[in-house]
Image (tube, rainbow, N blue to C red):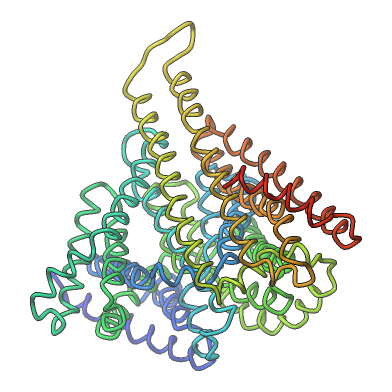
Length: 578
């Protein structure tokens, strides 16, 4: 029952939140910071408002609406706008920041799962803050906007998988089974929506649905939220899937406009409730954790986006601005931090305090980071770099103007998805079987036998992935050859493209091994041999591709390679990898 005190609390929350939000927006900061500060002010500092069932309900609806809007923005067509650069820098940035946050947690004696929470917190950048900055500066059509938005969409998708796993981690069963089941459910939902949303659209188009599109959208949101929660996952995951479904139906702009106030109302309560959970740290160690996380998150972002971006040939100006854009910690970090209380972790309060503090600090740091961009750009410009290794930069620029490049990348990710689903299915089935079947053969337990079987079945999948990545590299270098090597003839590029494809393959495999390595160390140490194998394979491919391509380039420039010999050898290589 709603009491007079609850109504007064709601009024106080909205008044203080809107006031602080307006003040911060006046000084070019996001209103979300005002909502969080409002929660800190009316809760732990002044004690005006106490947590209640109504506030908890409104905050849960706020999380649902936030993820619904994030799902609306997850347009697969927009993922291609960032090109190859975003698909390299995005996973790399997540891997580097997660690793740094995880190490900080271990350094201060936190458990593995608590350290993983810190890694997840600094892994995600803020879609809302970055998007608002780009819109305010009228830079949504720039190169850095295309790359950063694509990276943010990739982070949002990764965050949904993290939420699915952490949200069901308290259920019974082994952690491996919980992870695999959670990810499997999300992937199945996304696949079904991607393949069959057109049939849903053709059905509802028979009715006058456009007049009530917002009501249809809300109905789908709450239905999918219930359906997902029925399988033991957080209801917010269903809202994200509902947003993804509506984006596939092509009416996301109208829905965003009509439900904007509804979202702002409930999401304000969520951010206020997060601020109310904040407790001022009472120990030096808590401040040290927050400070070290701030330094590592900013440093990791500048290394993964700035230094690596410069190495890949994006240019010092683009790499430096991209680094500054990705500094602020995202909304998903706050949502993930609140799950620490659901899992009853001993240091849940420290985790939440870190997320809230980092969200506030990085948002305040971002304007100064943007002012630091010219100085960082000058620093990057002084670094030694090889224009012949600017694969991602050249391929990225070629992809923006080449329809053939778009089609090649699209087909690659479709086939790669099939390989990944096949590998995931093998691990999932064998994990479930090992949990249900127990026996011993020649001194080997069933768990060990199933583990060896999984590795044996995954080797062909790994081989298929390597060959597909190499095929993509050959095609991309062939398409982007003129821009990559403008001073060489066509038959020169044909000679070198196979070795350059090896370099691109090796770099991709190294990034893939880092991501899989962290997952294995955290949740499945028995499969850590696979990331190590992929990493070694990546080093071999990258080393061979680099040295042979550079040697070939120098010999071509000196006139040692003849057209006849290059045609003969290139023809054999072409037939081999056709």
